Image (cartoon, rainbow, N blue to C red; front, side):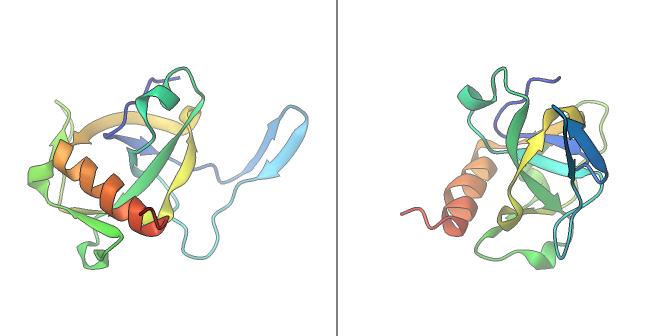
Length: 134
């Protein structure tokens, strides 16, 4: 299980089948407008909470930049830092209204990270708006 840090961008694939854990079966399927399939997720949970845990809090990214608004934060390529050997990022949007707990066993690989400025925008503007933090 990888160790994740706040502000990193990981490829994550939400479960889409029956999952059995501790003799309990649950179906993890997306419905409605939930984001599905392999996609980049920004880790937004604090490093203290991420350390040694099997899950983290993530916000999916989309390249449909027309989705940007007060809680869907525009991320220009100048604020996205691709890891060596990974494709450069395209202009994106952090979909803060689709925040979810992600299972680190479903993470595929790290592809980069956000600048400090972009991370601050996602957490202090997008998530603050969604959760009405004042």
